[in-house]
Length: 136
Image (cartoon, rainbow, N blue to C red; front, side, top):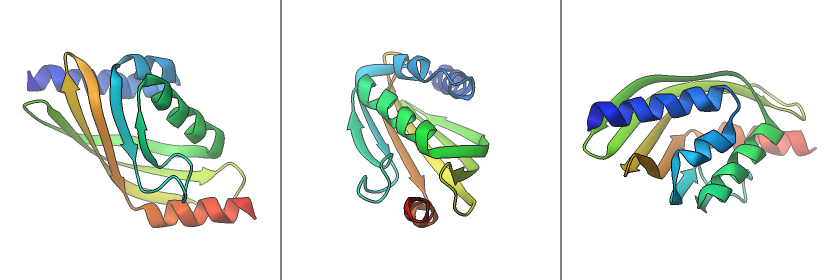
């Protein structure tokens, strides 16, 4: 089961890289719990979401506000229904501001060959600072 779960997540990263955010949402359960970063009050893509439409909303917000120069899932680990991915990214806000680089951890919970839960951990402070500067 663990190898199949890693394969699923690697396919979803490839789908994401192609810009097919509907495809990523389709790889999630209808009631998926999606939580990225900190608070939505600090950066609109952060915070908890529920359901496929909310996952599409997340990707829409990110693609409208952020331009990635690098997004790299680097290491994959699996145990039972979990896949843990270590990675890094570099981006700038589309409205300008400093370049942000952060390591991240993504934790996926798989149920019936779909993502049932997603949790992202990253250094939120530089993202929030860059977002605030882009609003000025």
